[in-house]
Length: 461
Image (cartoon, rainbow, N blue to C red; front, side, top):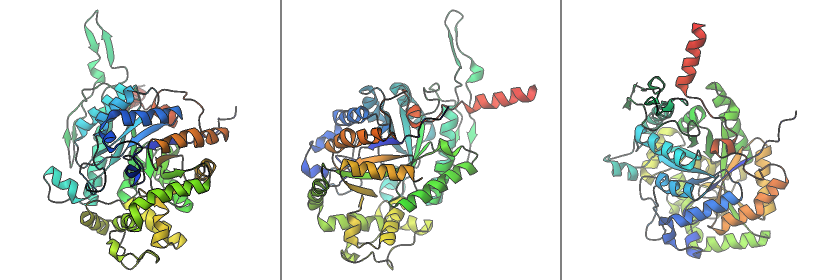
């Protein structure tokens, strides 16, 4: 029997009031919506109407951005997504949390709790946090070095997975007549002692509906690729050109294979910013209107921030000043991140790679990237075309969509783009399962303690 055709995964990334920095200026919804659950519940319901895999919330432990000119700050994702999960039935909920400024036990418990509350739809987007702004909120004078952040992240993830596995699936007996709640031999202390943490365990939450909540990782530095390929179920990435996307896709599958993983157990999902109109002219007019609120210097300022130089050093009608762009090596990248108050290796590389490949001026580059990701402006058919091209060319298993404005950008994508993908046979027409792992085509993992016991039993035989 022929296997069913491969289908893409799609997430909806809720970036404030929209993926465009000027979305709040058009006031589709008031800016105070960002501290109300109804706003997020509405977008989640729209996304669920389109049978999307999940909604995604970015986050950071600091107030970044110019509070005088932009709505910044937001609700804590794991708390917010609990309310969103209760207002939906199928769609996954992905919360971002930093390994740099959390502790494994508390975070493992929070994410597992969301998985129970949602009936198996939770995911944790694993990030590390650069920049002195966040560090100073946690009693530090400066951000940890890159290698220290990722060393901590790897140990953090190892602990969280062990904690999620510390209850075996059949540990709960619930024999009320004989007074036996659980088989204590199937609830395991993890007894972890490492460089960064000492955690005894077990977790005080039983195994969650998915076995383990889904792990998503966002980071394209060497440390990020190592951690992601080893632990993640999905990678949220930043490539802006098809060749770069194909190279990253192949590299991450090879890295997963080197860890002894099935490469198909790792989903690669680039971000895509969208501006969609019923005609190409309408889409560009919509984009131009949003751009006009930021102005050319505002758009160029986003580029300058991502490459670590002052906007005054950019000539809008010239290429990037290559002699001034900081070296992408990790140690220097960390130095720039401190100077900028934050920074992303993935955004840095995605931006300079696009500029190099196509010899773009600063002005042209500012029209090709939004929120650090590839920008697609066009009709629903054109958006569907670019998704299909990357999906079928070995550059992506799916996408994290960042519409220009909410809620209209999400509605246009769901009502106009999704039906095209369905007609082409590359996206689902209905949900066939209830967990995020099922949506992503990922199997439910067994507890590692169960697996160890199985091996011991085989050896005894």
